[in-house]
Amino acid sequence: GLVIAADAEPGVDVERVAAHAPGVVAAATRFGSAVADGEPATAILELGGTIAVVSVLSADAILVVLLRADADVAPLIHD
Image 1 (tube, helix red, strand yellow):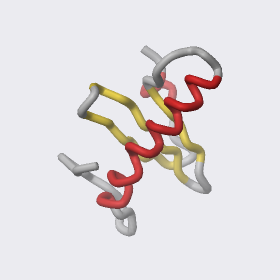
Image 2: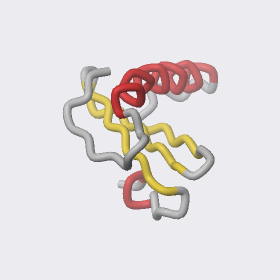
Image 3: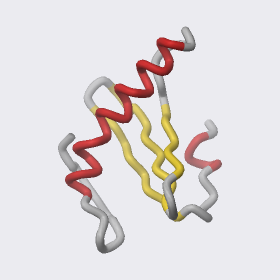
């Protein structure tokens, strides 16, 4: 992936995050196929102290939002 814009805490390698985003979407797509329920819109990864929200905006754009584990993610995942 190509970083268009980033604002991250020190230590976050935004280029590596962007590089892995398509793989997250690909895995979510395979999971959606396995449960016969279509393409993913959003994938949420709960890591040690971080929550990653990976959203498919279009065929050419993926949005990754990284939050502290104690952040309120509801506004990002509910329409």
